Length: 92
Image (cartoon, rainbow, N blue to C red):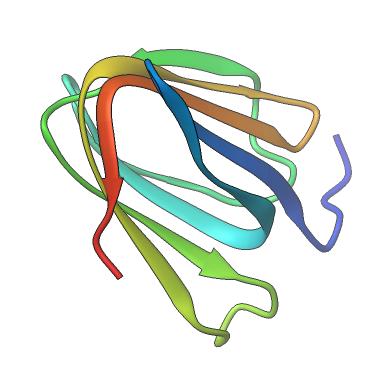
């Protein structure tokens, strides 16, 4: 799959949408370790480990959004990143 310039990211908690928008990279802790998602990433599904998710807003050196999340999963497909967690709150 050819890389495009941005990811479409959605972070949702059990009771609310926490953040959504365009990003150049998403870095998250999974039960298998830390992972970085860039545009063009292979489709995947991973279980989240408790920790901080970093979303770099487009462009790559743009501002970042930090989300504290626990007990959920991360899905990647066609440059769409969906993060669903039982608990999630903006840190910044």
